[in-house]
Amino acid sequence: MKKPSFVIGKKQIVLAGMTLMMGIAVYANYAVTSSGGEIKTTDKIEKHSADYGEAELVSLDKNTTDYFAQARIDRMNARDEAKETLKTIINGGDATEEEKEVAAEEAAAMTGLMESESKIESLVKAAGFTDCVCYLDGDNANIVVKAGSEGLIASEAAQIKDILLSEVSVPTENIRIFDVA
Image 1 (cartoon, one colour):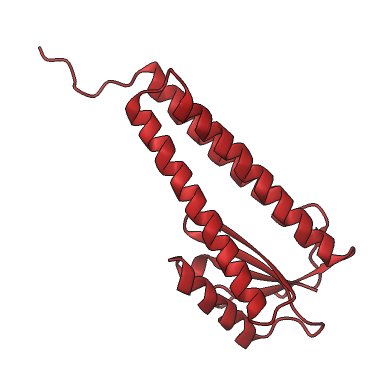
Image 2: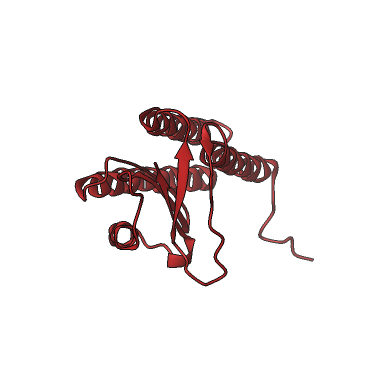
């Protein structure tokens, strides 16, 4: 009787567990920073139509500049933590070559996401918005912009969506744009 050619060993289980934990940590950090903290939603209008990617108005009690600065710091801290985990796997003596390759690919993908986020933020600011923070995660994109006192109008949301889609390939139903007043 032949042994199966694919055997799951301790190293593969540890790598899968660490990858899962890293993903959960990044998602938890994103969920906490995007829905909690200083942001309070007010007068949210419920629509029952299929207008995916519509802008939502979010109102802040504190200075919005502080929000954007803190959001960037939180995002950077989460990414730095994930990078350190990947570096540990890549440089660790216990990891197999296959595990090191997977970790290197994840690190490269993360670097690509960071570059895309930065480019999108710069382009949105160049389009006339005061400030912007972009969160990319696989097939999801969330953009928080600081628009004028009148809020975000449909043409501005479409402009932001066009900028986003010119840089990354994300399904339009997974794009969320938030206006922080």
